[in-house]
Length: 214
Image (cartoon, rainbow, N blue to C red):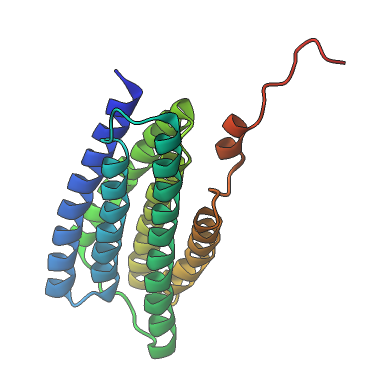
């Protein structure tokens, strides 16, 4: 399959899956009175925003190399901003839970949704990363890292619901969220400044080493 087309198809799947996941999560969260599930749903909508940027990125055809580079640079920065938006939201939610001692509500459908996300998101992140590396696309590699961050947020949701239900450890969910915020902000700042924060993104910009050189 053409790599540009694969990148677009993965992005379309990202948007469709996350919109569905977001709606279901918010409905379940409102039914259970769970701030954790509602926050998880809002995170899914931020991830769909990043996927939408990638759809825009990979549906532009017939461009010169210079135009391609400008679009790629713009896409990298836009994905970076979605990292920062998501980081700000998770920071707010986690801080509020710690200050108010909010314990996430138990929700069996919510746990099932989090497990499903843990099955889908790592595969999707790996697929986007491989495609991004093959294309030399920093924006798609960055988007794959945001998808992976969403998988870690699923882990946070499971930890929060599970540890609170089993051991009354109400603080597990917000503390895990704060750890994820560090990752989100670091990656977002790197991308907004013009890079993606990972060595794989920069290899394509360096000249190939001469295999005969001493």
